[in-house]
Image 1 (tube, each protein chain N blue to C red):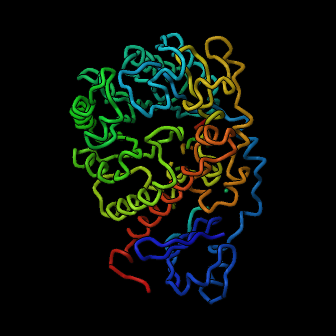
Image 2 (cartoon, chains in turn purple, green):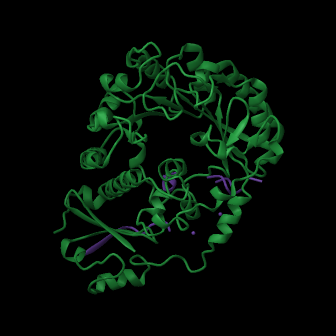
Image 3 (tube, rainbow over the protein chains, first blue to last red):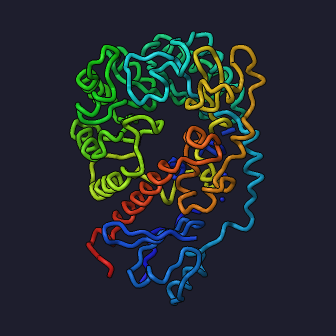
Length: 27
Length: 437
């Protein structure tokens, strides 16, 4: 039995653990 | 590649290249090899087809483009070592009691202004810029801190920038005026406290060898009570002297502080408080206790808050920070280094904001350093959560920024397992008490 808890996020402005660290609309 | 582990009798599987997290029963766990299934079931095959188990790196990914971007990166964040002096004598201080193995020195306003000008000039189209006032103890040079903040605000208006100010302090010199100014102007404040009185005072004495706990805790409480929801962190260090550090976390929380970070000491192996191989089982037990407590805790603990779905674009996971490229540190005399941890190491001097700021450019070796380029990292399951760890730690322990710091790696991996367990345990299915075989 397998239960998927998260599908994960995994490679946009330069405005940003790294996984835990955007104003594109920035110029 | 997958990673399997068990926390609190629950079995988890992380698919490294997709970031997918699964819970499995013990029978399924036994069918999963590290790099391929030992046997196939419809469930396993379905996840493989969906790219959520044994997935590969994205086919169109070009690491050279990523490196090239870093080699030409604008500078976005500045660590301003506003004071190379300190009024505490913390035993484990990497900054050598604030002096960074040099002389006691305070930054002048003109150097600070040159640093702000340098940051703006090198930020290109970056709008949000970060300045962290650091030391030593920055409150020992607070007039220059204030004048620098006011100068940066004026320049921000002129050049259409937004500054985000942070400050790290031991709290000794906090008074009402400083608290008011900090709360008004600083987006985040980091307050240094190690935990219980006896733990803190053993490692963080004043210059005249007295404890600092009773001096700073009331001031910290006053500061956060007037902060009205703005960010702060109480940040401490645990050592071999308090391997039961979960007790310190509970203590700090019980004082009323709710944003906490307690990190393992990084020190030379000759120090009597350094964390060694033999300490890891006890530390892992403490992290497990913390993880179970944290599922329903009323405090935030920094390293247990991994954001599995959000965070920045995934490409940022290839390197742990912007040191030497997007982030640099400036010393009181204007010298520029890749980050605060490299200050004073002559081989890493990048230039000086007072004398040759236009010649300061991103460090090519730092730009090329990433988890796919480091042998130890490329084959590690944790690489997209750890992102390669601290380059200064790698350098200090292996002599190479592309090396690694083994104890640090193992602690980080344990924290990631705990953080993912917490995220899973907070899901509704767990809240209902459902258990698997």
